[in-house]
Length: 419
Image 1 (spheres, rainbow, N blue to C red):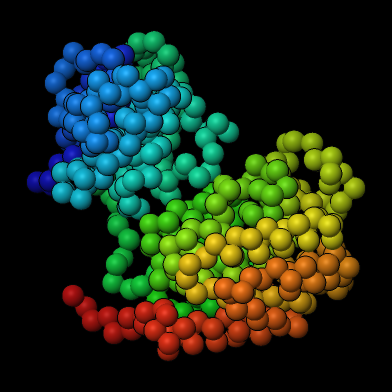
Image 2: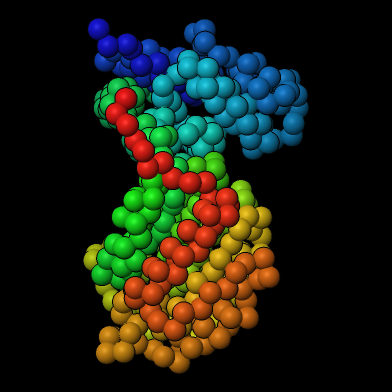
C-alpha cells in the first residue's frame, strides 16, 4: 500500500477547534495523516496537538508568557509566525511532514504566508483564508507554489458551506502530496524572465542553447506573479544564474500598477550573490486591469486591451528615465557578478519602426539615462540592435560562457546516464 502522506495542519485551536478537527477527519478519510500544530496565544484547544503553542514559542526563542506580554496581538502573532515557520521547516527537513495546510482569517493568513515561504518549492502548501485572492496580500508574501481557497461561511462555526470548502482543501493537499513531482536537482538551474513570444523572443534561442550546455532553464512569465516566483526561488538560492531580461513588472510597480511582483523585484539574485545578466525588456509598457479606468497619468498614451483582465499603455520619455534610475539603484545592491545588456535598437517587438508602439524619442531618452545609471559594480554591454535580434542572444551567451569559463557560474551537467 502507498505510504500515507503526513500533512501539517496549522490553526488557532482555541477558537477554531471544530473546523480544524473536521479538517483532520477529512485528511484521514482520504488516506492522509494530520499532524496538528496549535498557534493559539491566550487559550488552549480541546484536543492535544502534536506540536502545541509552547513548542511554537520555543522555536521563536521565546515563551508563550513573553509573547502574551509583548504588547499587542500583531506583535504576538508575528512571533508565533516566526516560531511556526521555523518549526514547520524543521519538521520538513527531518522528513516528518510532506505538506501543510493552514486555516485562518487575516491573522491566521498572515502567519500561514510566512510558513509557506519557509518551505521549499515542491512541498504542497494550502491556505484556507477569509482573504484569499485579496489585494490585502502583497506579492512578496506569496510563496511560489502556494494554493489558496476562500473560506466561505467561515466566520463562526461549522456549516454546510464551509464544510464544502474545508473538505475540498483537505483532500487537495493530500492529493498534491501524493502527486507532486519535486524539482529535479541533477542539473543546475538558470532562471529567465520573459513575456510571450510575440513580444520577447530571445528565450527561443537561449533556452535550447543553455540546455545543450547542461542547464535546466526555467522561464518565468512576467505578468506579476511570474516575477514573484523568480524572486522567491532566487531568495532561496535556487539558481546558479539568472537572466532577467523582462523587467516590465518593475515598471508596473514603480508606476503604481497592481500587476507587479512586489518592491523587491530585481533584488533577490543580487542580494544572494547569484550571477545575473539583466536587460530592460518591455519596461516601456505599463499593465493594469482592463476592468479599471485608465490611470490618469496615462490617459493620453497608446492603449491596448490584451483581454478582459489585462490592458497596457506605453510610458513617455520622462517615465522611462525614472524607470532607468530605479533599475540602476537596484543593480547597486547586487553582491554577485552582474552584467547589463542595453539594446539601443528597441526593447520589445512592437516598438520597432512600423509597429504601433514605435516611439524613438522615448526609447532614446531611456537609453541615454540607462547608460548613466548602470553602476560600477555591473558590466555594461550596449548593442546597436533590438532585444529580439540574434545579436542580443549572442551577447547573453557570450557573457554566460565567459562566466562559466572563469568559474563564476558552475558548469552544467551534460552527461546524464540513466539511473
